[in-house]
Amino acid sequence: MGAHIEEELISEYVEKIHLLGIRALYGDDVGAAVYSTVNEACYYMIMLNNCNPTVNLRAFRKSLQQLADTVHKCSTEYEQVLNGTILLISLYVCQRRKRKM
Image (tube, rainbow, N blue to C red; front, side, top):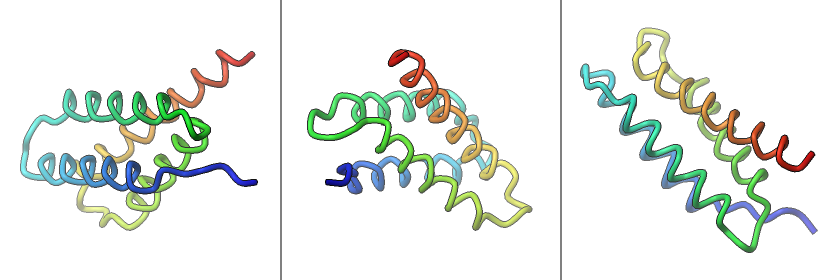
């Protein structure tokens, strides 16, 4: 039996990060909002009782990476938001792995 991935939840938070990336393109400082959004997303993914949180965190990170791979190289602010988000999610995954050891 495969792990259950919360696709709707992941899509919701990918969209939120996408919108923050667009705001960054227009010069808004979105660092605190990105951090808050990632914390909220990871909290909900970890608190879900019916699934493996690490699988959902990795799926979230993968969705953002796919989005980042399609970004035009002139969109550096947008790309920085995506890459920063991916880094934060990676840190959550690493923390979860360390706690299991």
